[in-house]
Amino acid sequence: MRSLPHKTALVTGGAGGIGLAIANKLAEGGTNTIIADPKQPVAQYLRLFYHNTDITSAESVARLYTYLQDRHGIPDLIVCNAGQGIKERLAEGDPEKWHNILNLNVMGHLRTIRAFLPQMLEKSHTTDIVFISSVAARKPHEWGGIYAASKAAIQSIAETLRLEVQPKVRVSTVLPGVVDTDFFSNTIGGSDESAKNFGWGSLSAEEVAEAVCYIISRPAGVAVNEITIRPAAQAF
Image (tube, rainbow, N blue to C red; front, side, top):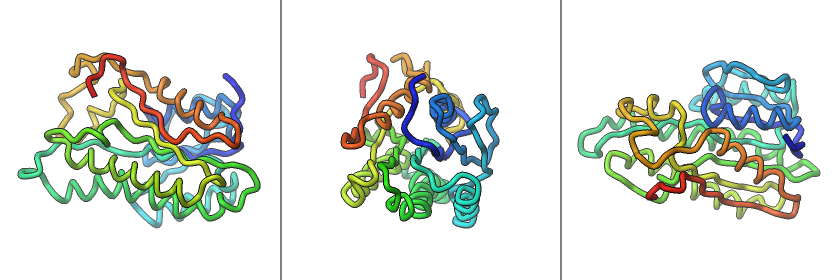
């Protein structure tokens, strides 16, 4: 594993799947990596740390900020990974569930950024914010309107943030296609699906993590603002 440039990283939703794969890669590369998640992961590297965090709660994010400031310092890298899927028709679904998804997939990341960004901008070196988005951001589909809307919002937020803070803070999005994780079993209304159902093959979580490592390991004057990564046979 190559050495990575950042001393401290924060990964939201890092207890499993893509988030844990990213956290493991960062820790393996020498980065002190804090996983912020309501669920505690099984740590695999000495440089992994955990803080019980629910990014849908302003108070929980405030506690996360205090923890990092006191124990590790303001992060050089934030990976906004936390999120959940939902499958409901817009004429039949539950708006309260939609609200919860948007609170996590969109507002949760905004809370996190707002907490840490001011001090990231004060650092003397280049820092990074990476959003884990989805190809669904650009492909609305039946039953997927709320999830796709949440990821489309992330794309807009990331581009706005890029215009506001680069070159001081580099801003990137990774848009994965089908990935073989527990995402589908945790999707509201989609627990009967799996990566195999689509018939396109799937990526591993580690392959998505490699894309993140590629982004952050570019020289300070180089920004990779977007990567789409998916199985070669995937239709969209």
